[in-house]
Image (cartoon, rainbow, N blue to C red; front, top):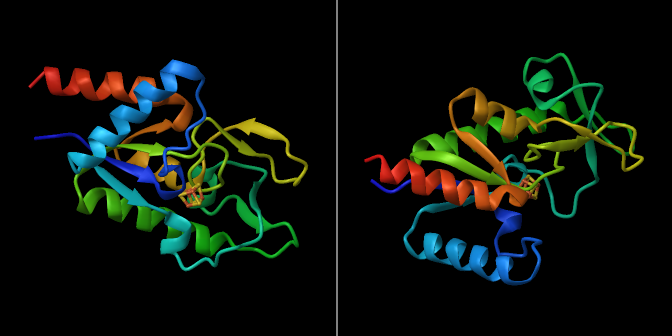
Length: 166
Ligand code: SF4
Protein backbone atom coordinates (compact mmCIF):
# COMPACT_ATOMS: atom_id res chain seq x y z
CA UNK A 1 0.00 0.00 0.00
CA UNK A 2 1.30 3.43 -0.97
CA UNK A 3 2.09 5.98 1.70
CA UNK A 4 -0.46 8.78 1.61
CA UNK A 5 0.38 12.30 2.62
CA UNK A 6 -1.79 15.18 3.79
CA UNK A 7 -0.55 18.37 2.09
CA UNK A 8 -1.29 21.99 2.96
CA UNK A 9 -3.44 23.29 0.14
CA UNK A 10 -1.41 26.49 -0.07
CA UNK A 11 1.71 24.46 -0.89
CA UNK A 12 0.16 23.08 -4.03
CA UNK A 13 1.05 24.86 -7.18
CA UNK A 14 4.41 23.56 -5.95
CA UNK A 15 5.68 26.98 -5.04
CA UNK A 16 8.04 25.42 -2.56
CA UNK A 17 11.05 27.58 -2.11
CA UNK A 18 14.17 25.69 -3.03
CA UNK A 19 17.29 26.55 -4.89
CA UNK A 20 18.07 25.56 -8.46
CA UNK A 21 18.27 21.96 -9.54
CA UNK A 22 17.07 20.56 -6.25
CA UNK A 23 13.79 22.37 -6.69
CA UNK A 24 13.09 20.66 -10.02
CA UNK A 25 13.73 17.22 -8.53
CA UNK A 26 11.53 17.88 -5.53
CA UNK A 27 8.80 19.30 -7.70
CA UNK A 28 8.95 16.22 -9.93
CA UNK A 29 8.50 13.98 -6.89
CA UNK A 30 5.47 15.93 -5.71
CA UNK A 31 3.97 15.79 -9.19
CA UNK A 32 4.53 12.04 -9.36
CA UNK A 33 2.96 11.58 -5.94
CA UNK A 34 -0.01 13.59 -7.05
CA UNK A 35 -0.44 11.44 -10.16
CA UNK A 36 -0.18 8.36 -7.96
CA UNK A 37 -3.00 9.80 -5.85
CA UNK A 38 -0.92 9.82 -2.70
CA UNK A 39 -1.60 13.44 -1.87
CA UNK A 40 -4.59 14.60 0.14
CA UNK A 41 -4.73 18.37 -0.40
CA UNK A 42 -6.34 20.12 2.52
CA UNK A 43 -6.56 23.55 4.13
CA UNK A 44 -7.63 23.18 7.75
CA UNK A 45 -8.54 26.85 8.17
CA UNK A 46 -10.80 26.89 5.11
CA UNK A 47 -12.35 23.59 6.21
CA UNK A 48 -13.17 25.25 9.53
CA UNK A 49 -15.03 28.01 7.72
CA UNK A 50 -12.51 30.82 8.06
CA UNK A 51 -12.86 33.34 5.23
CA UNK A 52 -10.44 34.31 2.48
CA UNK A 53 -8.89 36.77 2.95
CA UNK A 54 -8.68 36.61 6.72
CA UNK A 55 -6.78 38.53 9.35
CA UNK A 56 -3.44 37.21 10.49
CA UNK A 57 -3.65 35.12 13.64
CA UNK A 58 -0.96 34.07 16.10
CA UNK A 59 -0.73 31.80 19.11
CA UNK A 60 -0.25 33.88 22.26
CA UNK A 61 2.25 32.63 24.82
CA UNK A 62 2.28 29.00 23.91
CA UNK A 63 2.28 26.32 21.25
CA UNK A 64 -0.31 24.55 19.14
CA UNK A 65 -0.39 21.75 21.68
CA UNK A 66 -1.16 24.29 24.41
CA UNK A 67 -4.02 25.67 22.33
CA UNK A 68 -5.44 22.17 21.92
CA UNK A 69 -5.21 21.74 25.72
CA UNK A 70 -6.97 25.09 26.16
CA UNK A 71 -3.97 26.58 27.96
CA UNK A 72 -3.10 29.10 25.21
CA UNK A 73 -5.21 31.22 22.88
CA UNK A 74 -5.11 32.21 19.23
CA UNK A 75 -5.95 35.81 18.44
CA UNK A 76 -6.18 37.90 15.32
CA UNK A 77 -4.16 41.07 14.94
CA UNK A 78 -7.14 43.12 16.13
CA UNK A 79 -7.29 41.15 19.38
CA UNK A 80 -10.27 38.98 18.43
CA UNK A 81 -10.05 35.53 20.05
CA UNK A 82 -10.38 32.89 17.35
CA UNK A 83 -9.15 29.91 19.37
CA UNK A 84 -12.25 27.79 18.79
CA UNK A 85 -12.00 28.17 15.00
CA UNK A 86 -8.41 27.03 15.01
CA UNK A 87 -9.10 24.12 17.34
CA UNK A 88 -11.80 23.02 14.90
CA UNK A 89 -9.33 23.44 12.03
CA UNK A 90 -6.92 21.08 13.78
CA UNK A 91 -9.58 18.41 14.37
CA UNK A 92 -10.70 18.64 10.74
CA UNK A 93 -7.12 18.18 9.54
CA UNK A 94 -6.81 15.08 11.71
CA UNK A 95 -10.12 13.77 10.42
CA UNK A 96 -9.07 14.36 6.79
CA UNK A 97 -5.76 12.59 7.41
CA UNK A 98 -7.28 9.62 9.20
CA UNK A 99 -10.19 9.15 6.82
CA UNK A 100 -7.85 8.94 3.86
CA UNK A 101 -5.21 6.84 5.59
CA UNK A 102 -2.37 9.38 5.66
CA UNK A 103 0.80 8.44 7.54
CA UNK A 104 2.57 11.75 6.98
CA UNK A 105 1.80 15.40 6.40
CA UNK A 106 3.64 18.08 4.44
CA UNK A 107 2.61 21.38 5.95
CA UNK A 108 3.36 25.07 5.44
CA UNK A 109 5.70 26.30 8.13
CA UNK A 110 5.05 29.37 10.28
CA UNK A 111 1.28 29.08 10.30
CA UNK A 112 -0.59 28.91 13.64
CA UNK A 113 -2.32 25.88 12.12
CA UNK A 114 0.20 24.17 9.84
CA UNK A 115 3.55 25.37 11.25
CA UNK A 116 5.84 22.60 12.45
CA UNK A 117 9.35 24.03 12.85
CA UNK A 118 8.37 27.54 13.82
CA UNK A 119 5.38 29.73 14.61
CA UNK A 120 5.08 33.42 15.46
CA UNK A 121 5.16 34.52 19.07
CA UNK A 122 1.81 36.25 19.39
CA UNK A 123 3.05 39.84 19.32
CA UNK A 124 2.42 40.42 15.58
CA UNK A 125 5.95 41.69 15.19
CA UNK A 126 7.13 38.98 12.76
CA UNK A 127 9.00 37.32 15.61
CA UNK A 128 9.47 33.61 15.12
CA UNK A 129 9.78 31.01 17.82
CA UNK A 130 10.28 27.26 17.56
CA UNK A 131 7.02 25.36 17.82
CA UNK A 132 4.07 23.80 16.08
CA UNK A 133 0.70 25.06 15.01
CA UNK A 134 -2.52 23.41 16.16
CA UNK A 135 -2.99 20.96 13.27
CA UNK A 136 0.66 19.94 13.17
CA UNK A 137 0.64 19.27 16.91
CA UNK A 138 -2.57 17.24 16.80
CA UNK A 139 -1.40 15.18 13.81
CA UNK A 140 1.88 14.37 15.56
CA UNK A 141 0.00 13.41 18.72
CA UNK A 142 -1.91 10.88 16.63
CA UNK A 143 1.14 9.31 15.07
CA UNK A 144 1.17 11.17 11.76
CA UNK A 145 4.67 12.36 10.88
CA UNK A 146 4.75 16.06 10.08
CA UNK A 147 7.27 17.68 7.73
CA UNK A 148 7.54 21.34 6.75
CA UNK A 149 7.95 22.34 3.13
CA UNK A 150 11.63 22.91 3.87
CA UNK A 151 11.87 19.25 4.89
CA UNK A 152 10.54 17.82 1.64
CA UNK A 153 13.82 15.92 1.01
CA UNK A 154 13.44 14.30 4.45
CA UNK A 155 9.84 13.35 3.68
CA UNK A 156 10.88 11.77 0.38
CA UNK A 157 13.58 9.77 2.18
CA UNK A 158 11.12 8.73 4.89
CA UNK A 159 8.55 7.53 2.33
CA UNK A 160 11.20 5.59 0.37
CA UNK A 161 12.48 3.94 3.54
CA UNK A 162 9.00 3.06 4.74
CA UNK A 163 8.08 1.46 1.43
CA UNK A 164 11.40 -0.39 1.10
CA UNK A 165 10.69 -2.11 4.43
CA UNK A 166 7.57 -3.77 3.04
FE1 SF4 B 1 -4.53 26.59 4.98
FE2 SF4 B 1 -2.88 28.21 6.36
FE3 SF4 B 1 -2.45 25.58 6.37
FE4 SF4 B 1 -2.01 26.97 4.16
S1 SF4 B 1 -0.91 27.19 6.08
S2 SF4 B 1 -3.13 25.01 4.29
S3 SF4 B 1 -3.63 28.52 4.23
S4 SF4 B 1 -4.24 26.62 7.21
